[in-house]
Image (cartoon, rainbow, N blue to C red; front, side, top):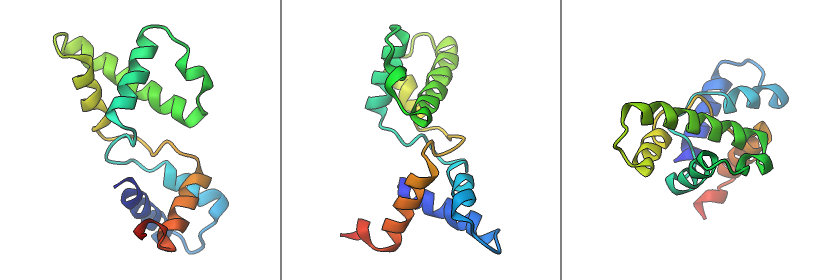
Length: 124
């Protein structure tokens, strides 16, 4: 599902260009909004719980992943203030499945995924 959404973002950016510059335009692709955060609810729960306990889990993450988890964490805190009786796992589920401002991946990673899709790698 993520790959399908990524290729749609790629096509949307590609259609707007008379010349597609891979060094610049994949940056625009990964910064397109998407339908959800592309991380499992279980992993997001683990990371959010660790942040809440004060563990330095973000210190070892790549900048894009760190940014994504901070966005998820901040949204969880905002919802938790309103839904004080809701279990954390349910709030995380809601946040992960809500629209995300971008794909939270490096342009090169997006390029590799799209090239693999075009070459039929994921159909095997």
